[in-house]
Image 1 (spheres, helix red, strand yellow):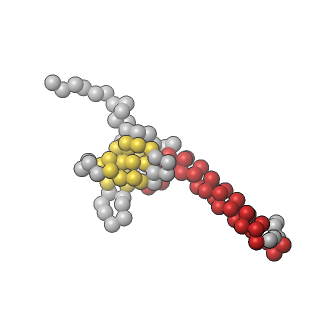
Image 2 (cartoon, helix red, strand yellow):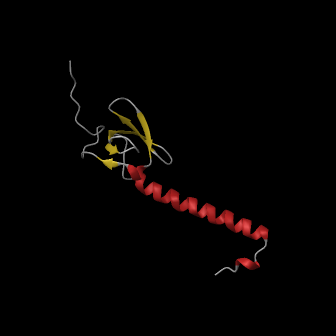
Image 3 (tube, rainbow, N blue to C red):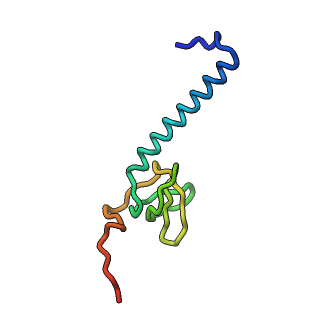
Length: 100
């Protein structure tokens, strides 16, 4: 265990910076794990605060969020921990039929 009383102000500031960096790394790893559960084209749902549930399609995976396009054309940036899969088929992998 580190005896903080023996550290100088400079050493404490350096330690604090290292702790903050490590916490950011852990958070990024956790977010990355959530991100891996989703692919562009997946049908997903989520519930924004104070609103009804939203269903949409994953259109992009950002660094910390996933961009979702809903049926009305509104784009949402949502943390992947709030998303739930809807249906099993990815729209990109679906069979497409040309309509004349």
